[in-house]
Length: 148
Figure 1 (cartoon, helix red, strand yellow):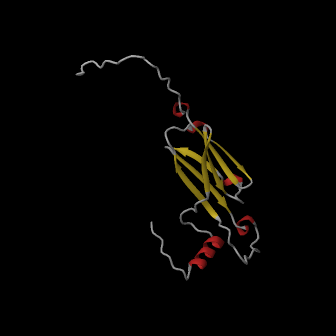
Figure 2 (tube, one colour):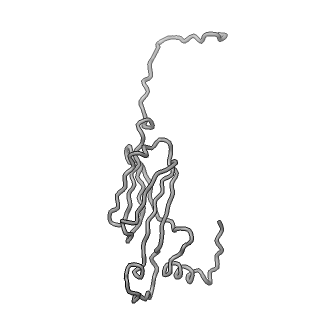
């Protein structure tokens, strides 16, 4: 999908999208991802999001996070709200991440605190590193069937 860039209307388009919303593709959300011990942790910045709109799902090795931030006009029964400035992104936010085979998708957990959604993905037991014991035979090894 391509998007045209017109610097003359960029700010007007941004303002219209933020004030009136958009039914186009959901907006992305900033995130950090890191490994902490036996877990992968993904943190999404979602300040001002109603926790009841948060959806976190894992299906077919894909983690999907969706959330919604409504405008004051959407939250109030009267239409007396008239924005002077509307710079904070609003609408639906969505992000999808591909998950590796080595994760325990049955035990994913999520927590939303102080505007940050933290998703914890544990590493599956079968994918955890294992120490391999190295034995020392102490002699010459003979390879059968070979010419020595």
